[in-house]
Image (cartoon, rainbow, N blue to C red; front, side, top):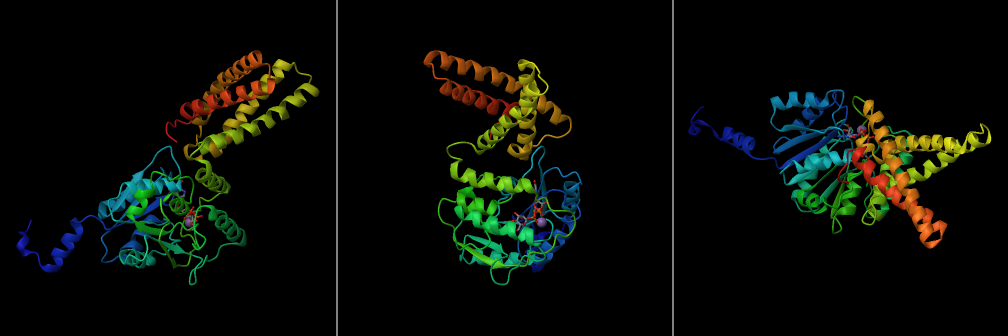
Length: 382
Ligand code: GDD
Ligand code: MN
């Protein structure tokens, strides 16, 4: 190594930039974005010249090898990092974890597929540094912004989402569905314990979770077409959004997963009768046998739907699906016995069958929820 005195001024500056922590962390959630990450890093380099930045990719064990690709890039440039999560999915929760791993005073979220215009980042940073706002939103719906080549269906869905979001965000925020924004670290820190972190809409979640109204600004950009790969937005994303809204409204009283679990449970009753009725009426099966078959069908239906909706972020596949199904049926059978025991007890003690039945259902379903949450889907927290 050369003695320090032989470094010239320019070298000293770059040496300093190299050692100093980042001022701006760009968090990029990824799922199957292998073909996009190198291009994105290239664009960040050219957009953020002169800024001490870093990028944290948060990858949910993409089967296409996104994380490995990022690690290759990280060996060339220490400003690049990757957090890899296993057995979990979720855009918002991924962003939250990326932010928790950063020390930078400014945090941005950017998609990996080049749809968000990274050239807006310096202007976003300047707005925050100037103190004009605590959070800056890349906006498609202010003058100068646009949604590019979205089809009419997607544009309409986005508009419905915006209208519903008014429960969470101020009226004058034009693009509350944006996935592209930058904020002071403090905004995140003051909100993080209240965040629902469900689904895709972290921005609306932040607005709803921050203890005081956020001072925001919107900067326009044109939403570009996706580079490589495909969108992860599907019909379950709409369910996630409904759960986010619900969590913000009633989450402090009842866990939103329990609400989802109960909705699925009620649908399961319909399945039960749809199986039971023809078995009794048409096939003339013995009642006990018919009831057992119907219960098994209903439990299987409930398991499959809970796996898809309630535990979308911890979804089981392949042989884990089978193991999960077995544990679910086992737990719910015990729950069924508890249901009948409690119901009979209330009925015998107080003589009211409606209260008895409801009490049995409540105890049984709470057992089912608590036990399958832990044993079937391996969740101990939320
Ligand atoms: N870690 C992780 N886990 N990342 C995910 C997941 C996930 O489960 N699902 C999606 N992503 C990543 C994608 O890899 C991509 O980098 C980014 O999140 C956005 O996902 P897309 O599938 O491309 O979403 P989109 O283009 O339909 O919608 C985006 O733009 C909208 C408009 O700004 C999202 O950012 C929306 O939230 C946003 O409303
Ligand atoms: Mn996209």
